[in-house]
Image 1 (tube, helix red, strand yellow):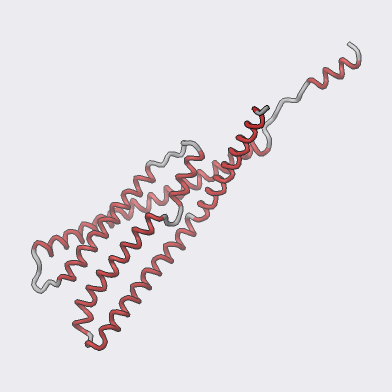
Image 2 (spheres, one colour):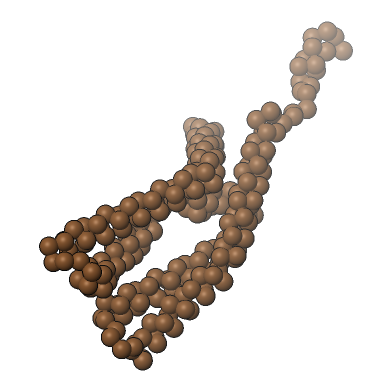
Amino acid sequence: MNVDDLKNLCKSIKAPTSPSASARGSAAPQNGLLQKLKAQEASEALQLRKARPLWLAAAACFLLAFLGMLCVPPVGLRPSRLLLGGVLAVVYVVNAVLLGRRLRQLARIDYAESLHSFLTKAEDRHRFMGVQECWLVGLGLMLLGVVGGVYVEDNLVRRYMSPEHQTLGIVLFCLGYLFVCAAGFTFTYLNWRRDKAPLLADIRKMKAELTADEAGELVSERCGTGP
């Protein structure tokens, strides 16, 4: 074997391939995010399971009270009071049903499914409010506001305020109700921002990275199979 043959043999021998630093570290962010999601969703499920008996008890009480007023109306029962009782019963029953639905959703999470599908579902679970939730909350608050206004006007304003001050009483109720709604929305948003917004940002970041990687692989495949 001459010197040229020896050089060619050395060039043909390649070092064993080793995983790159990006490949070794790519699984770490995924596992870290999955652990955070599991911990947060387990905590949420625990809180909902604790609150569920209270919501069920409240829904049963309001429903029974409404049925009692409907079947055996007390003396001097005003229609506005019956209307308010029915709306409150419906609101508490719907909230109890939605709470159970959320618990079932959390119990059916599959952490072993494909990463892209899991991230898409996790993004939907951890967003603040979607279109459906906005419509549901908006309609519920509007219904409560109207019925509550009718009840206050019929049972309080007319009975305890002079005619020239009744408009002021209704305006004060409207302002107070709007303040309560705004305060509830603010506290709900702050709680979401504290507990879920960071996770949602991580989910969207990883989803974008995964989409970029898939696009890069698709381009590479097309370039490799091209003429």
